[in-house]
Image 1 (cartoon, rainbow over the protein chains, first blue to last red):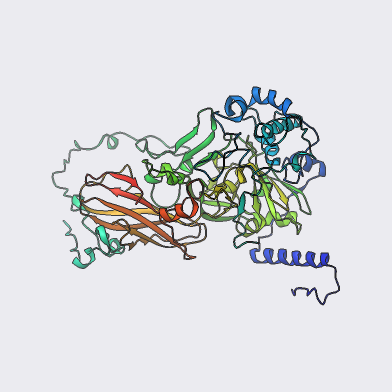
Image 2 (spheres, rainbow over the protein chains, first blue to last red):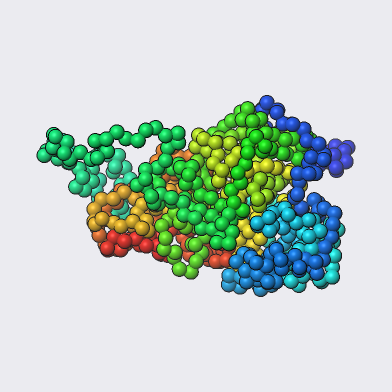
Length: 188
Length: 426
């Protein structure tokens, strides 16, 4: 398979990129040569996919409809979260959620405020896994509200700010630039 | 009585400080190992009066599933869970009580985020969707009909050995601070087979894997690894996966940190970018002293440990011993393990037990004549890429002490004159 030379090929940059991507995929699959299976996978409908997926990406993909504010979130937090995470996200038996101490110090607590790079991760994680004794029991509105409360106690948003599918991914977390990717090795 | 073969004096000359002997010594000749050799059978009571009781009565009948001897009470996982949330924690493999390279299934380490789900395989489905041409669903029964492959490899938690970052060396049996690693033969479907059936779109670069546990644990995996050597595992050491190891199916990514080897796998969403889940941002990232954190540190670098003797053992006086330990690397085969019995001044090459498998436990052994004096034992592994396990001071200098994950420095044991063994930084 020869690679197209963009200077000689009368094709658009988009087509060229697509051909290169397909060439790369061809290369990957040809070297690994995964054995052919009996092809027993059952096709999924769009509705089935939607009912399965609860991943929420940094750009907001996967966020459901709904909304919430820290004021609503505080009541929920105090009744469902504080017994493990402590009042206002501190001093409990579970993770420290609140704190803005510098990360370059000695053994800093890594909290939502000083460490988590994306606010969308809060929604994704609370919805799928919290509270520990009753995961998936919170409504989407309640998850937005709890996310808003945790961002408020960390001084990242105002307690009146409404979080929804549009406003949540717009929040820039204090440690957004705090990570260096080791993969892919050798940089990309 | 058979006379023991005389030992060639030359082979008992140490090859390095502290009494380390040639690694081929045990292969060359049968050695008189202490007083046990030359057992005298005279004086045996022919009436059977000295027979042990288990030779005088019938034994227990057959069993449907065998269990370890009731005398082996110490070869157990050590559980370390959150008191308020007993399903959230870890249990450690007792490396100090095991030999060879395969971890028994009941002793494979555990990390659960919210307990072990009791999954009915008839109801379980694996779905593939996102950037694929054909979103698909598979039952367990479907997958058992696919072409299977087997591979022996280690699985190691990114947080294994994290006590090594502590200011003071922790004093506990070696399995209880390095035992978040185990090694098994995994059998399953090459993940590439399933991915090709779904047809990954060119812009699909990451798989977001999700488990069917009460944490619905999710994490992002690069497509390159998924297509390379990742296995959708159904069997562990010949039997179907144990519930605590992902029954009915899990991912195995040879050589990569265990959190990516998602258990109870129920879903793979193909995406352009990582989902930035909790376990790839706030956890399993290594904060360095600069305040920046390393992210997507997938490969488990070469590591080795002496498992015998190790803390908790007691040397039984001066004499001949065999040093035994484990080495492994997420980048391939172990090429060499060296042992020092003088705190790192001199090193002797250990014998590596065949077969030496890529990304798998490799057992090393070395004969040693201890003279009864205090000394420091160390081991260091080199893998086939040429990478050598670093000294602790080098690793700490490079990473700082806040990283928590990916600790792989050389481990040192101090042997005291009284035969006791402790963990030291040396």
